[in-house]
Amino acid sequence: MKTRLILKPGQRGTKSLAKKYGDALLCVRFRYDAESRQRLKTIELIVERAEWTPPPPRYTADTVVPLHIQAADMPMRTQVKAAGGRWNPEKKLWFMKYGTPR
Image (cartoon, rainbow, N blue to C red; front, top):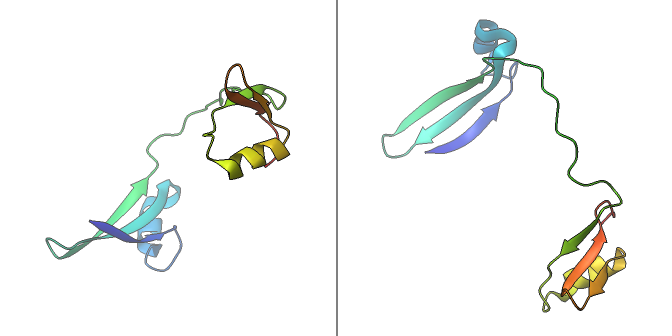
């Protein structure tokens, strides 16, 4: 089954569904089943809303993280080195700050 079209509420082809389901409607999908030769219209609805607090970030911007880069991957090694990464021959790993821009 293949999805060919995903529409947001209010777009052409969704107006009656948006009227019926209101703010609970997230999207309308048109899926095509080649085996049964049918087009299926599906909808995605919000059924519950609850408060949620995202977990704290795993790493801060100045946390040094290890990177395993294959020896043959020269472009990646060059990119990490240019971003301030350092090679540790004892551990055979690259280390760089987590928040370093690419």
